[in-house]
Image (cartoon, rainbow, N blue to C red):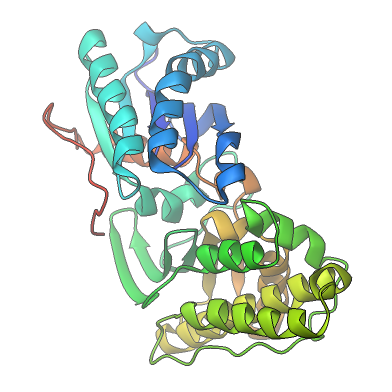
Amino acid sequence: MSKKHVYILAIESSCDDTAVAVLKNKKVLSNIITNQKIHKKYGGVVPELASRAHQKNIIPIVEVALKKSNLNKNQLNAIAFTKGPGLLGSLLVGVNFAKSLALSLGIPCIEVHHMHAHILSHFIENNKVIPNFPYLCLTVSGGHTQLVIVKDYFSIEIIGKTLDDAAGEAFDKTAKTLGIEYPGGPLMDKYAKNGNNLKFNFSKSKVPQLNFSFSGIKTNVLYFIKDQLKIDKHFIKNNLEDLCASIQHTIIEMLMEKLVLGSKKTKINNIAISGGVAANSYLRNQLKKSAKKHNWKIFIPKVEYCTDNAAMIGLVGYLKYLNNEFSEINSTAKARLTF
């Protein structure tokens, strides 16, 4: 094995997706994700069921990832894993498996912060365009919404964050109000493509500085739907596409307004998005429109690196490997991990 190459096996198990990837330096050789469909009938992730599914899935997925990468486990240089934040039971499955495998192979393990991985997912070699430092990154997912200045790989400043709910949660909860099955965000994006963005007017939260708030729109949509159903019991069915388009438009507008303000305040024109909501087609299109208007250079990762995945964990693992930042054997999962 050439000393120029570092092979990292990465594990991501922070929520309900069991993901394993193998990287050669910054290049992804395999990126396997298994979704847990069991949560659909509950309308959201059930933590106990998620951790059990991770236990069932992790060994077969590691085997598939290694096979697809054309490597065997003895060629690996390190094992990277998501330390947090996330569901504790789910995280523990990935963390304990990673430490056990690393110990059996006599190689180091590397802990990775989930949000750090989302922010640096742009540096995966398989992406078309790699950002220049510094860049402004809007990170939006089911659990987080943050606006950060990325000065280098390990120097990141949070300049804005949600004061309550995340944008991804707002998508899923309003989708649930409309009777859309979990996960509702991607389906809302699909229905919205045929809807009128301005058919229904929903209020946008006004919060100071570069922070966000999405609890208001969830309440607004809930009471609006309740009132309309009293008048027409088929209201949702008859207006589903327009409702999805209008809700999506409102949430994305709140995100874009803060991103524009952040760019003006920091005078940074390198703009990136990351996280699960970065896969939303309307957000991606609005970012492209704003880029032309404000003369931004934008960076949008491939969809497969937006949603929870192990490739981004491996990328940070590789960067930490170069810095000899290895984890102690007693390192454990943390559901609430600060960043």
